[in-house]
Length: 340
Image 1: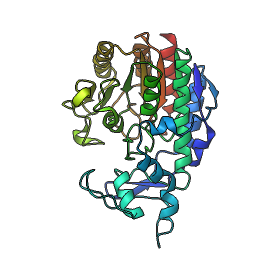
Image 2: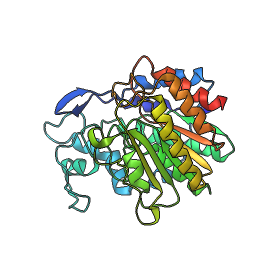
Image 3: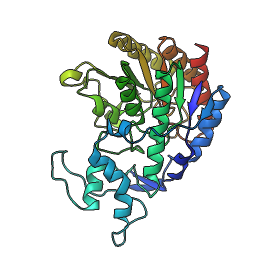
Image 4: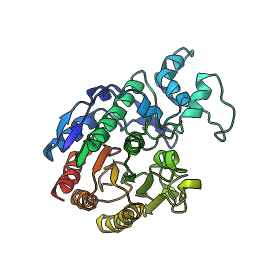
């Protein structure tokens, strides 16, 4: 399987995030790259560096206002007396139609959904090359590859068109899907991360030409809380082109496979001709977030079922945090894809 990675993604090394009012070590660390790379290579992946497709494929799904913010906010933030080393918001607008302030503090609150997406001097560069990695994987499928893997880090599925959140800055899976759509394909995004892909959903919620499907831990009591409920079906031209399949906490392999069958049925009904897999591995039973309870063997079943559709796959790395099983989970998933 063709795989893509740019080492400039390592530069983003967030020190902290806040959860439950507590400052904690950030689990989205550069070490994830080494673990995931080894796991992919164990499944037979051969890595290449992506080319630079420029900003246009990113700007196709993100607003210019937001991209300008991401690129320049840290330098602006550091001019504030007493500012912390990372940009973390402390005030948010009540809605997206409220005023757009000139201050760095106000814009941080506007463009960062939560306290789990700290921005450092290196964040923009790493996020840019994470997106280029996903673009390269999509382009390889357009060129005829049957399955590709993008080791994109930082991840992307919590990033909206103009809003970062949950360790995510640029929506790599959404960027890849739009790249495929522009190339004349009809993409479905299948998000198997333990957290709902709220940014991806928001990005395409009113679009009928990209299907978004997410299988995740029930957000009634789990991040991202406000999105990912079953009644969210899309709007306008996108009505019926969004499917959420929330699962009870600690759902295991069999329950997950039942939801996956429903997801794949919807993808067939959409007549998709390519699937972007938002490949979170944090549904594992031993992942630090403890949302679901999929086993390592279960990831092979998931990969085989998705590949069993016969559609080309662009697998874009999302979550999955440092644990003894992280690399093995990726090996299992990609081996399941290859064997199918």
